[in-house]
Length: 372
Ligand code: CP3
Figure 1 (spheres, rainbow, N blue to C red):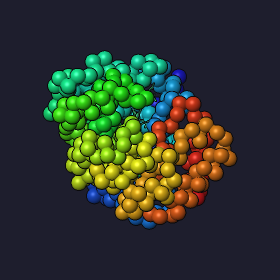
Figure 2: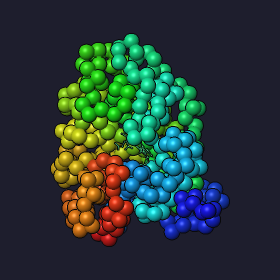
Figure 3: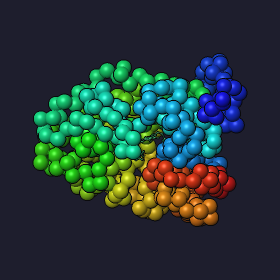
Figure 4: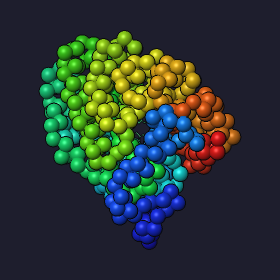
């Protein structure tokens, strides 16, 4: 029986998988071709023929092919199987025709070698069985000196890079310190992040100790993904929007800056957060040549706030994809109109794609961006 996500025939697909031999035959021009990819030029705010597009969580449960793979292997089993994880993303890029591949992984595996007991429980999302609740618990989070336990992630980077045409950049990623601290403290996803904010407000020294440990680990992890062949990286601060600007400045900004700094010396960094557009200037201050914008603000207003010396990524509400094709087209065109042809816009959603999303609406979005 043939499995569509794992073709046995290695013939290059429409988006043009290149045989490995060609890549290694000409190192310099490979680097040059990769740096000229549409998305890389948009990161540098160079003029482009059309707006590049990719979608956060583009390989996920909304795709029947992905669900079929998941019938055979659990989520962490997939994440730790570099060949399969790379195939899942490569097949998704081929199917959607997007302009970038993000490695197939998650925010949380970095926490395992730091001492967190992580599980992706069926129907529950991520669970950490030994959360950090008291100031003294922070000592349980080890410094990530040695990245060897995360070698499988670097293998996913290499396998994904090897399987795609040079015109498709490979994006590495990590969770931002606040978002990772939130998972460590809550033990899972939360609506209000009450334990997290309570520890932050009541035990500031322990908080900064925790954030320091995470920020140094994230910095090393992002650099390692670049060394393994990612062309750029994205930092996800998915839940930091629960903070005010003043609290972000005091409790978060220095740590996000530490997490980004080294990677940003080597490659473009996309710095993404959701939930509170008032944080945007501070996100830009913390770092990133591209700032990720959610849908709670018009893209043109967001761009003014972060400054036109940065590129921006966003910002369609993922719920729009649960509507119909005409609405998807109209809303996509609205985002493009907000960008107004200014160089440095990468089209994306304002947050990850939802599992209920019809694939045809995703294809409509991508066709609309490509035909504009
Ligand atoms: O297509 C891709 O982008 C694949 C790589 C990817 C995943 N997660 C795979 C995944 C990326 C970049 C992420 C990032 C991620 N993970 C974020 C930031 C993006 C966002 O949406 O805010 C967050 C907050 C997480 C943590 C996480 N992982 C949660 C809360 C959950 C459970 C809820 C959910 O949406 O499923 C996951 C699981 C997860 N990560 C899945 C996938 C494909 C689904 C797991 C499954 O197959 O059952």
